[in-house]
Amino acid sequence: MIENDLLQGAVNDGVIQIAGLRSLLMSSGSGIGFGVKTLDGSYRVANPVLERLLHQKPGQVLGKSESELLPSAVLATLGPCDQQLLEGAAGTSEEVDLAVDAQPVRYLWLKLPVFDPGGKLQAIASLVYPYVAEQAPTAVQQTLDHLQQTNQQLQQTLVELEQVASTDKLTGIWNRRRLEDCVRREMERFQRYKHPLSLLVIDVDFFKTINDRYGHGTGDRVLQLLSTQLQDGLRGADSLARWGGEEFVILCPDTNKATATTLAERLRAQVANASFPEIGRLTISIAVAECEADESWAEWFQRADEALYRAKAEGRNRVHLAPGTGGHLAAEDGRVANFVHLVWRSAYECGNEDIDRGHRQLFSDANDLLAAILSEHGAESVNATVDKLLTDIRAHFAEEESVFVAAGFPDAAAHIAMHQQLIARALSMGDDYRAGKQSLGDVFQFLAHEVIAKHLLGADRKFFDHLQRKVSPAG
Image 1: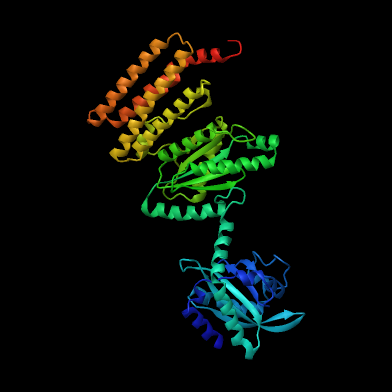
Image 2: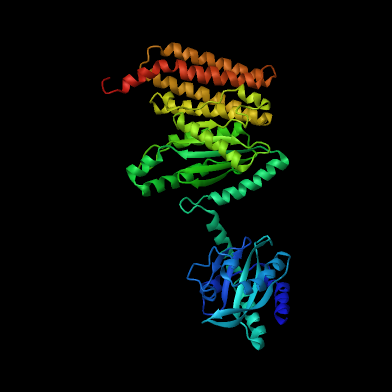
């Protein structure tokens, strides 16, 4: 047919490299019915002319397939067209009879491929207009000319449509649909290359109370601010999505559970230490689950969801690592079980902002070192992590000493001497580690157990009560 010659010419001229539609979509003055359906067959776009031809009210075409919209005879005629496009045809057209005012009217139904910027078939566009034999070539040429003029607008329209379909309206981050598309791809990579893959599931603690006390508008603003804060705390490869309500999910490619747990703890602490307008403080609970071989997406998420439930049941504002499918750490993860992952609790606070901030920083430093060990980072990276932890210990001890000395702590001299002994031993162990005389695991165990867990959570508590008495109204 002449129409096919025109289509082929348009392809050769680069007109239909990507289907575009904004001008045709926005106007019904041309008398041309226009629509775009995705490859699953459901219409995403339909202009008023197409709606009238299909006897649908405004908006009713969207989400429906041609099998729901067309008479069986028309459907049978158009059926092969989609398959031809899937097989690489530049375009197809068929003459069909559509009912107008209860009378059959002959129309030309033209179908064109919609390509994404990479040249991959993304959708199928339809143009439907009255067929008059002697005028058909002119009509087709005019239509193709119109497509050429609006090609750039069309590409932007499709990008916008995809953005809307994959973005959470409230927060602007990924929605559940976009996340699950990404999960499928990452799980395929995981199965093929055996790269670790982890998931964080986050839930806002007592969010219902926020809505009840301050209203849903405030609750929405809290979710927007929280999503921004979470996004700012992620690494480049991580992906954040709103799963629904006050629940978020973070997908972490090339990340094992130890590193994911460190990330989760850092995010939890950042949120706990932040101040939110209108409500003040806010906490979150986080579950961490690493994907296992031959595990489905549903099974993986279920493990994470159960871990989140346990985190909430154990008091909230904490990170909980999901056990493996066997209910415990696998044998090859034995080295994980031999280390202590430090989780900050509000009960550890003394009430002095500087000291509490320093303690939280040392917790974070220790967990960063643990992640470096378990992720088998290079020696340069591990050495830098050890140096930062030692530097932060010395800085914190000096700041802490100035606080409790100024507060008149009676055992200040003995406590300072204890600090000096710990620093001397830590520096000595650091030197021995670099000289190959001390294992990195031993260095971590000393810093995490002796300096942080035992000293910060044990000996330091002796001056906590003294500081609190100094600031109490009665004192």
